[in-house]
Image (cartoon, rainbow over all chains, first blue to last red; front, top):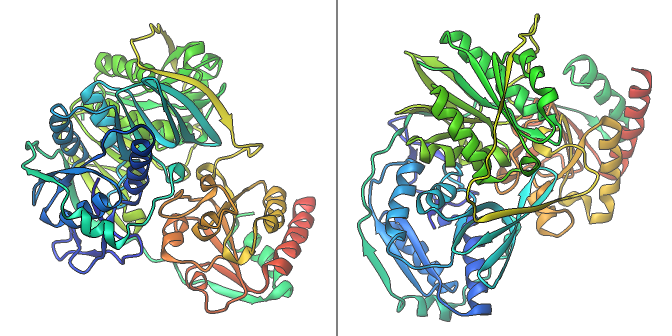
Length: 243
Length: 327
């Protein structure tokens, strides 16, 4: 689980031109990981066991870890690093290294972080651990050591059966996250957080520059109501040449 | 850069995806710049007859792995086949479409090849004998230029951004069959369940007619379906209408939905919040129909009509019917 700027936040490029200035951004649990966490909590409510959240990130990630504990996780592992490489392969290797010491049946990820949009860590960790991984799932059923997952693809879903332990990456439709009550937020502070350093791996993905996308040329309002319709068809054909 | 460019030519049924042709075309462009060749990989069922058609887009060689078990994407099988080929031909670059399959397969290959992926690239260039990839982050609020240390460089290409171009004359590629031996796996792909009659996926559609909160309810999307059908397009939706339960999440355009770049995007009753904007801003032409003249969507649409969607959309459908009848 990771801490990311809220999707409604305006993103500013830092002065170095190679990174994002996040000082005044609002931070939240990565939305896809909220769906994943909710799935984990629902599985616990149905079958028992415990939900552990694992975060690799700076000191400031504590706020989203506490939120996750309030939302139903039992304990947390915080691999604390202030400047871990911004590289999904390095992140995956550090997480896989840690997970070799943790026992689990189901490993849930968000399908991607809404910050770097890389969509790599889940399947990479699973490959490193030698466990199956079904990505972009919208439904998960567990029974007798097996999982049946529905994977959202172009035009439909693919139903995949996997032997546990297995990894899954959550698509938006997987669950509807709950809200934490004030009482749960207070109780979260008593839940254990194991803080340790991640094993370091070199970053091999280098960002050379960050730019804003070029602005769109200004458009125009053709008119009001149905009278403007013939004009629209005309400009789409003659000017924009898209029909 | 030493070594050929390996491109995963994804198929669906016994047809290549449009994004496969886009990837092969881009691979050809890069191969010409770095004086190497394009080696395409096709994995599927009953696809071999189509394999040589990749020559039209610039493939010099095509390797085909065919089996009933490869009909649907099975990560362990596809990864094994791609990895075996990559180890044999030592590519400098591996390109895959940024589809659900490509984005699942690419990181798996990367971890085995000790490298990393540049995801959903919108532009590739070669500079000082190195691959530089441009990719959107923060849902397109910014564009990153990235470089990968180590080889091969792996990139997934956002569908509908790169243009598939047929060459004249076409290359007639050498086609080889790969033998497929089922590797050990803990996953069984059961079946594909279609969402319905929708022919195209949002990410590959040329025309998208999208509806937002202004549609008022699920029953009203019928008028958008009609317009889309006349124009050979598909229907999309804003987060507000998906969260309201009017449309499935698979229709959602925006930061927590699909990122699309059709030729024409018609936004109906959509205000244009940043969440939605980032998912469709790279459409070639954006049309907005909204009764609120102050809606943010008019700030970035190419053409706008201020009006009631329930009047304007049916009128547009009728006008388009006339237009397509004539042309």
